[in-house]
Amino acid sequence: MKLIHNCMLLLAVFSAIATALSIAVHANTQSPAPTRASPSTDPNQRLGDFRIATFNAYLNRDRQGGLREDLEANTLNPQIAAVAEIIQRVRPDVLLINEFDYDASGASIEAFQRRYLRAPQNGATPIDYPWLFHAPSNTGVDTGVDLNNDGKIGGAGDAFGFGRFAGQYGMLLLSRYPVQFSKVRTFQNFLWRDMPGAKLPVRPDATDSHWYSDDALAVFRLSSKSHWDIPVQINDATVHVLASHPTPPVFDGPEDRNGLRNHDEIRFWADYVSNADYLYDDKNHTGGLTPSQRFVIVGDLNASADEGDSSANPMMLIASHPAINFSFKPQSAGGIENRTGNSFAATHTASWGMRADYVLPSAHGFNIRQGAVFWPASDDPLHRLTSHRDVISSDHRLVWLDLTITPMKQP
Image 1 (tube, one colour):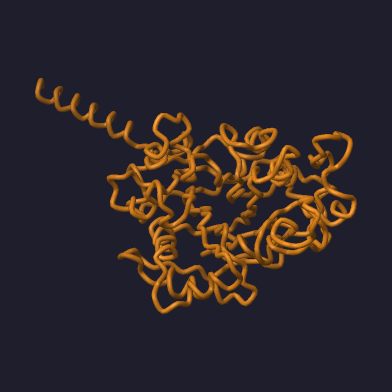
Image 2 (tube, rainbow, N blue to C red; image 1 turned 90 degrees about the vertical axis):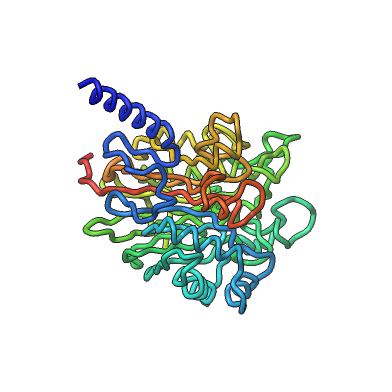
């Protein structure tokens, strides 16, 4: 009996240690705990009905056509191959890629799928996405007015979104489930001034004077890239994938024009899931989502509720919204190593040290089963895909959740 008792104590100790070391993946209290510490090393371990992810994959180039050239080159590009391997190892069913240069022909996407995702990278299993959505981005699209008030018209700073050419830093959605294309909504052309209470910047020397001219405000679009509502059919449910990539809240001056725009780009989703009637899409349909519709907000939002340079803490509009589940925070061991001593490091999603990338499901209609930031520790063989200093794949990390679809609560 004493021997059995001692064995039971040892098992209890080992169990406690295993629980303490389980940093990279956390199970929701409503769901069973994952059986392994990190699905990043075991991509076949899945919980729930589907896996959804966001990844700022750094697939942007300095000139138009540059990404396509890299994708179609005779020799595989190491950075793109690293991005593809991460996707193959995590294996999301639905994936938003930020910073994928827009190519109206679709050739870049075709080459990325054919040469990288559908081909094994370092022994990882290929993955195929039969459905995809891409659309023009505001980046690099000339406004015809002087937005940055430098006395000149033209260039990246006077585009609707900063970009050296139209579509730089674009977005791409890949899905293993059908996209309901007829119900997709885009908000590329929504004007910033049409948002009630918009945080339009003012001149620091005259608080009653707008930073932007009347001519600029008449054309200025809120989205630095775009805002998308992409309905995806998953089993018998429609899941609205709400995708965006707000401008960084920096690279401006005391007028804080980028910080304020970042705030309102994030606020857009808080209003959209509240079915705000002022919203209009690119087909002039108005309103947002109703309480009976499931959604997942995904993207590099360039803001944190805890750190960083955002203005008026726009993430609190998301974190405090009753329709959004902000309680679950994906984590990684690599993030902790990257910022030793930072109490938020486990949740960081960028090498420069902040939580910027999000997968946020609606509060009703889902159970979060597990999730993580793909950022392996330095002693993990897959750490070679991320590193802490060099851009091996991207300066951001892929973030994913496993979700179970549940009945919607009646409002």
